[in-house]
Image (cartoon, rainbow, N blue to C red; front, side, top):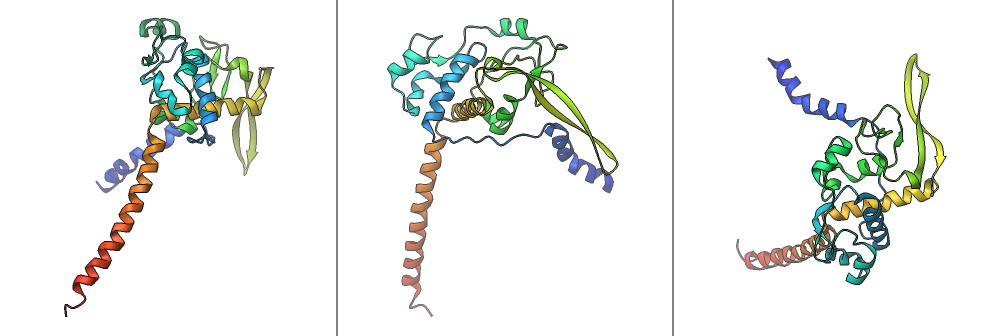
Length: 241
Protein backbone atom coordinates (compact mmCIF):
# COMPACT_ATOMS: atom_id res chain seq x y z
CA UNK A 1 0.00 0.00 0.00
CA UNK A 2 2.82 2.36 0.89
CA UNK A 3 4.59 1.67 -2.43
CA UNK A 4 1.34 2.36 -4.30
CA UNK A 5 0.92 5.73 -2.60
CA UNK A 6 4.50 6.68 -3.44
CA UNK A 7 3.98 5.66 -7.07
CA UNK A 8 0.82 7.76 -7.31
CA UNK A 9 2.61 10.70 -5.71
CA UNK A 10 5.45 10.71 -8.21
CA UNK A 11 3.40 9.73 -11.29
CA UNK A 12 2.87 13.36 -12.42
CA UNK A 13 6.61 14.01 -12.18
CA UNK A 14 7.38 10.93 -14.25
CA UNK A 15 4.83 11.99 -16.86
CA UNK A 16 6.32 15.48 -16.99
CA UNK A 17 9.82 14.06 -17.45
CA UNK A 18 8.63 11.82 -20.27
CA UNK A 19 7.03 14.77 -22.08
CA UNK A 20 10.01 17.05 -21.56
CA UNK A 21 11.73 15.68 -24.67
CA UNK A 22 14.18 17.87 -26.57
CA UNK A 23 16.12 20.37 -24.48
CA UNK A 24 14.65 23.85 -24.88
CA UNK A 25 16.71 26.98 -25.48
CA UNK A 26 15.96 30.08 -23.44
CA UNK A 27 13.99 32.66 -25.41
CA UNK A 28 15.74 36.06 -25.10
CA UNK A 29 12.50 38.04 -25.21
CA UNK A 30 11.81 41.50 -23.80
CA UNK A 31 8.12 42.49 -23.52
CA UNK A 32 9.09 46.17 -23.22
CA UNK A 33 11.05 46.24 -26.51
CA UNK A 34 8.57 47.95 -28.86
CA UNK A 35 10.85 47.64 -31.90
CA UNK A 36 11.06 43.88 -31.37
CA UNK A 37 7.29 43.62 -30.87
CA UNK A 38 6.61 45.59 -34.06
CA UNK A 39 8.98 43.35 -36.02
CA UNK A 40 7.31 40.29 -34.52
CA UNK A 41 3.87 41.57 -35.53
CA UNK A 42 5.10 42.05 -39.09
CA UNK A 43 6.47 38.50 -39.22
CA UNK A 44 3.26 37.14 -37.73
CA UNK A 45 0.93 38.68 -40.32
CA UNK A 46 3.25 37.84 -43.22
CA UNK A 47 4.18 34.26 -42.37
CA UNK A 48 1.71 32.91 -39.79
CA UNK A 49 -1.67 34.39 -40.63
CA UNK A 50 -2.01 32.42 -43.82
CA UNK A 51 -3.12 29.52 -41.60
CA UNK A 52 -3.24 30.72 -37.98
CA UNK A 53 -5.47 33.43 -36.62
CA UNK A 54 -5.55 35.32 -33.33
CA UNK A 55 -9.28 35.72 -32.88
CA UNK A 56 -9.01 37.12 -29.34
CA UNK A 57 -6.93 40.08 -30.49
CA UNK A 58 -8.19 43.13 -32.36
CA UNK A 59 -5.97 45.03 -34.76
CA UNK A 60 -6.51 48.35 -33.01
CA UNK A 61 -5.00 46.90 -29.83
CA UNK A 62 -1.64 46.92 -31.66
CA UNK A 63 -1.49 50.65 -30.96
CA UNK A 64 -0.02 49.46 -27.63
CA UNK A 65 3.13 48.69 -29.62
CA UNK A 66 3.61 52.31 -30.66
CA UNK A 67 1.83 51.96 -34.00
CA UNK A 68 -0.84 54.30 -35.34
CA UNK A 69 -4.10 52.97 -36.74
CA UNK A 70 -3.02 54.12 -40.19
CA UNK A 71 0.25 52.17 -39.92
CA UNK A 72 -1.74 49.10 -38.86
CA UNK A 73 -4.07 49.47 -41.88
CA UNK A 74 -1.20 49.96 -44.32
CA UNK A 75 1.19 47.29 -43.07
CA UNK A 76 -0.57 44.66 -40.98
CA UNK A 77 -4.15 44.27 -42.23
CA UNK A 78 -4.49 41.79 -45.11
CA UNK A 79 -7.61 39.82 -44.12
CA UNK A 80 -9.76 42.53 -42.53
CA UNK A 81 -11.42 45.79 -43.57
CA UNK A 82 -11.82 47.61 -40.26
CA UNK A 83 -9.12 48.23 -37.67
CA UNK A 84 -11.51 47.13 -34.92
CA UNK A 85 -11.84 43.60 -36.33
CA UNK A 86 -10.20 40.57 -34.80
CA UNK A 87 -7.11 38.96 -36.36
CA UNK A 88 -8.88 36.06 -38.06
CA UNK A 89 -7.94 34.13 -41.20
CA UNK A 90 -9.96 33.31 -44.30
CA UNK A 91 -9.11 29.59 -44.16
CA UNK A 92 -11.75 27.52 -42.40
CA UNK A 93 -11.06 24.74 -39.90
CA UNK A 94 -12.44 22.22 -42.42
CA UNK A 95 -9.99 23.40 -45.10
CA UNK A 96 -7.08 23.30 -42.65
CA UNK A 97 -7.89 19.74 -41.62
CA UNK A 98 -8.12 18.66 -45.25
CA UNK A 99 -4.75 20.22 -46.13
CA UNK A 100 -2.70 19.50 -42.99
CA UNK A 101 -4.55 16.60 -41.35
CA UNK A 102 -5.52 18.81 -38.42
CA UNK A 103 -6.97 22.32 -38.23
CA UNK A 104 -4.24 24.92 -37.49
CA UNK A 105 -4.81 26.21 -33.95
CA UNK A 106 -5.60 29.80 -33.08
CA UNK A 107 -2.49 31.47 -31.69
CA UNK A 108 -4.11 33.98 -29.33
CA UNK A 109 -2.86 32.21 -26.20
CA UNK A 110 -0.27 29.80 -27.64
CA UNK A 111 2.56 31.41 -25.65
CA UNK A 112 0.69 30.79 -22.39
CA UNK A 113 -0.09 27.22 -23.41
CA UNK A 114 3.37 26.25 -24.65
CA UNK A 115 5.74 28.82 -23.17
CA UNK A 116 8.18 31.20 -24.84
CA UNK A 117 11.14 28.79 -24.63
CA UNK A 118 9.14 26.03 -26.36
CA UNK A 119 8.08 28.32 -29.21
CA UNK A 120 11.58 29.77 -29.63
CA UNK A 121 13.17 26.32 -29.87
CA UNK A 122 10.36 24.86 -31.99
CA UNK A 123 10.64 27.52 -34.69
CA UNK A 124 14.40 26.92 -34.95
CA UNK A 125 14.43 23.11 -35.14
CA UNK A 126 12.59 22.21 -38.34
CA UNK A 127 14.34 19.83 -40.73
CA UNK A 128 13.60 18.11 -44.02
CA UNK A 129 11.93 14.69 -43.73
CA UNK A 130 10.69 12.95 -46.91
CA UNK A 131 8.68 10.47 -44.80
CA UNK A 132 6.14 13.09 -43.68
CA UNK A 133 3.26 14.46 -45.73
CA UNK A 134 4.58 18.02 -45.60
CA UNK A 135 8.21 17.07 -46.16
CA UNK A 136 9.15 18.64 -42.82
CA UNK A 137 9.63 17.43 -39.26
CA UNK A 138 10.61 19.02 -35.97
CA UNK A 139 12.86 18.05 -33.05
CA UNK A 140 10.61 19.64 -30.41
CA UNK A 141 7.32 18.43 -31.93
CA UNK A 142 8.02 15.15 -33.79
CA UNK A 143 5.71 14.37 -36.72
CA UNK A 144 4.07 17.77 -36.53
CA UNK A 145 1.57 18.45 -39.30
CA UNK A 146 2.74 22.03 -39.79
CA UNK A 147 5.29 22.69 -42.55
CA UNK A 148 8.17 25.08 -41.92
CA UNK A 149 6.55 28.45 -42.62
CA UNK A 150 9.85 30.35 -42.21
CA UNK A 151 12.04 28.08 -44.33
CA UNK A 152 12.76 30.76 -46.94
CA UNK A 153 14.37 32.78 -44.15
CA UNK A 154 16.23 29.97 -42.35
CA UNK A 155 16.92 27.73 -45.31
CA UNK A 156 16.62 23.94 -45.30
CA UNK A 157 18.22 21.72 -42.66
CA UNK A 158 18.75 17.99 -42.33
CA UNK A 159 18.82 15.82 -39.21
CA UNK A 160 22.08 14.09 -38.33
CA UNK A 161 22.45 11.51 -35.58
CA UNK A 162 25.80 11.57 -33.81
CA UNK A 163 26.71 8.62 -31.59
CA UNK A 164 29.23 9.10 -28.78
CA UNK A 165 30.47 6.87 -25.99
CA UNK A 166 30.98 8.09 -22.45
CA UNK A 167 31.65 5.89 -19.45
CA UNK A 168 30.85 2.76 -21.42
CA UNK A 169 27.44 4.10 -22.43
CA UNK A 170 26.44 5.04 -25.96
CA UNK A 171 24.77 8.42 -26.33
CA UNK A 172 22.88 9.67 -29.38
CA UNK A 173 22.81 13.41 -30.12
CA UNK A 174 20.62 15.15 -32.66
CA UNK A 175 22.32 17.74 -34.84
CA UNK A 176 20.92 19.86 -37.64
CA UNK A 177 23.09 20.48 -40.69
CA UNK A 178 22.47 23.11 -43.36
CA UNK A 179 21.16 21.79 -46.69
CA UNK A 180 20.50 25.12 -48.36
CA UNK A 181 20.84 28.72 -47.29
CA UNK A 182 17.93 31.02 -46.62
CA UNK A 183 17.51 34.77 -46.90
CA UNK A 184 18.95 35.24 -43.39
CA UNK A 185 22.02 33.95 -41.61
CA UNK A 186 21.77 32.18 -38.24
CA UNK A 187 21.96 35.33 -36.13
CA UNK A 188 19.41 37.17 -38.25
CA UNK A 189 17.01 34.23 -38.21
CA UNK A 190 17.30 33.78 -34.44
CA UNK A 191 16.49 37.49 -34.08
CA UNK A 192 13.43 37.11 -36.32
CA UNK A 193 12.20 34.18 -34.25
CA UNK A 194 12.93 36.07 -31.03
CA UNK A 195 10.80 38.99 -32.25
CA UNK A 196 7.98 36.67 -33.35
CA UNK A 197 7.93 34.85 -30.01
CA UNK A 198 8.06 38.20 -28.22
CA UNK A 199 4.93 39.23 -30.12
CA UNK A 200 3.19 35.92 -29.40
CA UNK A 201 3.87 36.43 -25.68
CA UNK A 202 2.36 39.92 -25.93
CA UNK A 203 -0.57 38.44 -27.88
CA UNK A 204 -1.29 35.99 -25.07
CA UNK A 205 -1.61 38.75 -22.46
CA UNK A 206 -1.49 42.30 -23.90
CA UNK A 207 -1.90 43.94 -20.49
CA UNK A 208 0.89 41.94 -18.80
CA UNK A 209 3.43 44.78 -18.79
CA UNK A 210 1.00 47.35 -17.40
CA UNK A 211 -0.28 44.78 -14.89
CA UNK A 212 3.22 44.21 -13.54
CA UNK A 213 3.86 47.96 -13.40
CA UNK A 214 0.62 48.57 -11.50
CA UNK A 215 1.43 45.68 -9.16
CA UNK A 216 4.78 47.23 -8.26
CA UNK A 217 3.11 50.58 -7.48
CA UNK A 218 0.46 48.85 -5.35
CA UNK A 219 3.11 46.95 -3.36
CA UNK A 220 5.05 50.20 -2.82
CA UNK A 221 1.92 51.97 -1.55
CA UNK A 222 1.07 49.03 0.72
CA UNK A 223 4.61 49.16 2.10
CA UNK A 224 4.18 52.83 3.02
CA UNK A 225 0.79 52.13 4.60
CA UNK A 226 2.31 49.31 6.65
CA UNK A 227 4.99 51.62 8.06
CA UNK A 228 2.41 54.31 8.90
CA UNK A 229 0.05 51.74 10.45
CA UNK A 230 2.84 50.30 12.59
CA UNK A 231 3.88 53.77 13.74
CA UNK A 232 0.25 54.60 14.59
CA UNK A 233 -0.12 51.34 16.52
CA UNK A 234 2.96 52.08 18.59
CA UNK A 235 1.66 55.57 19.31
CA UNK A 236 -1.70 54.24 20.54
CA UNK A 237 -0.16 51.55 22.76
CA UNK A 238 2.89 53.36 24.12
CA UNK A 239 1.19 54.23 27.46
CA UNK A 240 -0.41 50.80 27.94
CA UNK A 241 1.43 48.81 30.61
